[in-house]
Length: 361
Ligand code: FES
Ligand SMILES: [Fe+2]
Image 1 (cartoon, rainbow, N blue to C red):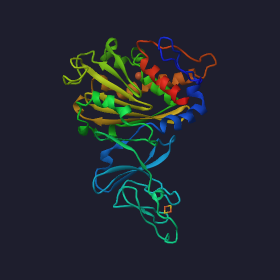
Image 2 (cartoon, rainbow, N blue to C red):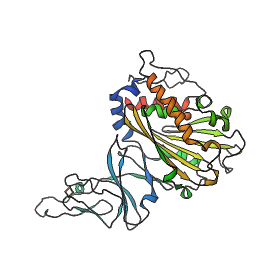
Image 3 (cartoon, rainbow, N blue to C red):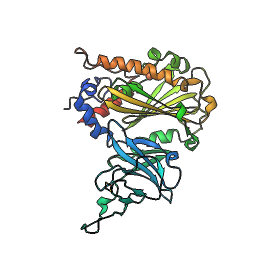
Image 4 (cartoon, rainbow, N blue to C red):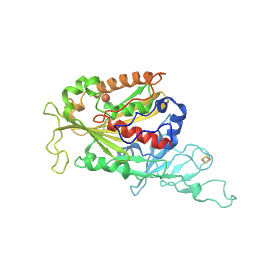
């Protein structure tokens, strides 16, 4: 039995043992066991809106550190490719650009925008060349509205991560959501990435930690729904009777004044929908006790941004950051190893802990 075993029955279960957050071995294991095969957000289609657009980026910089490239070819096909030249490993594209092909700056190897090898100087004498190993590696790409995701592994189909969330908010016109750099932000937290996620996964702490948020959402009507295997949603209902979604009759929440949908997608992505739009939170491990969280703001109806559950997100984030950093200190104690779960309020956290334990096996 793995030392990170978590019982399925929440009423009998103990929380995952603290080694999961403190051990460098677990931190390193998560990299290939959890993050590499999972699906990760890589931006939206506005990054590559013209034919010939190339957008280089590093997937989870400071953790996975995988150099990747988004391209859009002349037929409008979008691809996610390895950004590493197949000759001697130079990075191929350094800056976002527009080009009809990709030319390596080291020895001039040329690739098509679909990653296929095209030409190479001084290689006439080379036997069995080129082969498909000389093409750029192509990663799977999943598109939801304008949002793009990739996975370093072809192990899991994207649908099992995203389909429940997609269905639940299918009434929202995601193409009308616009990214706003000026409203987006990065936070650096002195805590393990999993502590940040598990805090997000329960609304139990809202009355204790977020007095402002607690004044606008109805804690007695706050619900968590698990989507197996890899996602969940928490739903906040407006307490004040305003700032809620206009839901279609097909919605399971029809008739309720939903102020926020908080979706979590394993292992590290949060999609928070508010009547004004969407805040995507990407939790990025930097060290066993350091985490970067990017808040990406997509505006739909700007005039609704200043009120309700989706207002004061910076304040709520700082309150979460503060408490999570205290927990980071607590979990190093000789006297704390595991706790128990509230059956009514912590099933999201229990679900997450079970996944961590299962992946570490
Ligand atoms: S490393 Fe790219 S051509 Fe040599
Ligand atoms: Fe919180």
